[in-house]
Image (cartoon, rainbow, N blue to C red; front, side, top):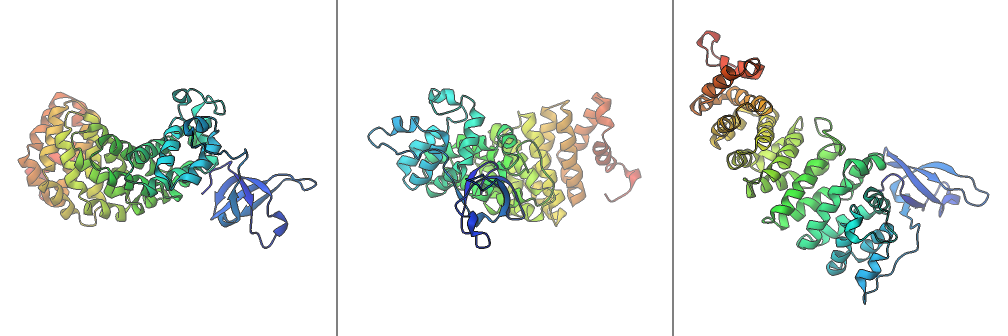
Length: 407
């Protein structure tokens, strides 16, 4: 899939064969077709056309580069970002060569790290945009899928994809970067790399950050609730299982737990298939394990609580979901977080959401045994703000005999 502004060549048109071979630039993608601006050629004026992806080929706007195997680094340093993309496409099957190219590609966003090669822009975003317009994102994903066990390719590839999806690049490409990366198997490439390196905390953390970004419709914030195209790609690519495994592998790593919990919480919100996949992968136990081990991080605790709430709200069987969380020690973990982070208002709200949903799923007694009523009352006594929160009031009313049974 091409990003906006990619140079292409028209090919294989039957209805208008006179346009075959003409150069163009992608403008948009809608309804399975690309909007193309065809360049003027001789007496033929510029024009706009809607074509299928199968009728487009990438076009190289600069002279192709040759890799000098006697001095590979030197020859790569003389390449433009567009030429690097094409070289990676040509040599992706060779792990040694593709690893060398990927190492240089990782500096596109920070050209000072490579000493500002002559054919690079001094602006990192400009380099990444040029690389993606030459289908560099496809070359990166293909190399990762071909060599998941190669740490130098997997780790670098994840970091490269992460920068491909940052807000600045998305703005330059009109929001086309995310769909383009996902369309060529980006989620599967990241999940595969994470599965191949289960003990590499740095790689898993970066992978969680990429998958979290992929769960939203763009890189600038949370997308829609429900099964968006982005979230479907992450689910089908094995992203949910990858996030859960990473959480379970490094429960004390708050820097990993935060993006993993955020990504999963957004994935399962309003998306039953994603919720079922998360439950099947053991998300409840991994989440509670993260809460216990990373209790010192208020941010991680808040995001993990949000995940527990969404797992229960999205579950087709709330009592079963609540029981699984209670059996994993969820009520105690939530109460410990509240005791550790007295006065943390966002955490308090999320924690109350967990307790209310646990009670609604038949686990009120479990939350009582963990000391939830006393913890919430203490918070309400310290600060009137806590006493005004609806979720806190709802939970505390459950213990008032005058309210009556039920939830």
